[in-house]
Length: 229
Image 1: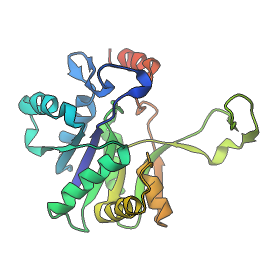
Image 2 (image 1 turned 120 degrees about the vertical axis):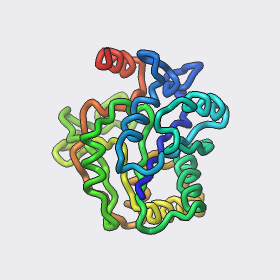
Image 3 (image 1 turned 90 degrees about the vertical axis):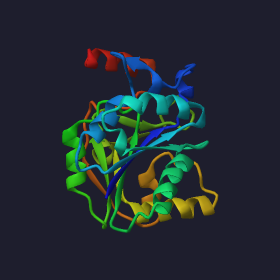
Image 4 (image 1 turned 180 degrees about the vertical axis):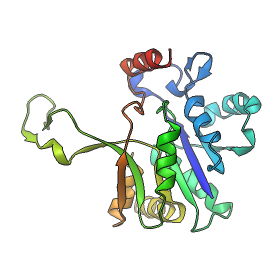
């Protein structure tokens, strides 16, 4: 089985919005619906877990009532951090009887322009030996600044990458990594591959997509509107 956890529990604090950005609409479609449709239309995806803040669970349930692929969808309540929200989805699937042969793709709902091509490439590379993350090589010069005012050190960009989602994992492995982190009171990870690395697991890089950017600022939202048309 191949599962998807679509992370929708964020509060958009950086954009200071009354409504979390995943519930904004472009062309009469909520932002989270764009990647949701890409996952749902792919016949290699068996089930999609919508991880939703409890405040919006009723709203999301109402939105998906007329969704063509509703039978693939399950809503799970999110938590106070992304890491805990991911664990809620993993824990749900484990309780439903997920096996060590199952995989899960974890995706940010506000990476709206996920393509079928990238999704299929991730699925094609699934392996119990490593996790998978789409990544882009850095093209700008990079520096380090502790005070965020003055450059302290210039870094060689050749070996640096920016990571995207969906990130893919053997479900049992990533569940154990999350479980161990929470048991040790480590609950501030915002990227699931970091949990794989600290448990000595391997993460394979595949080429990402520059249009698979995450909506985090009003500039991003403006760019998205221009691209969608």
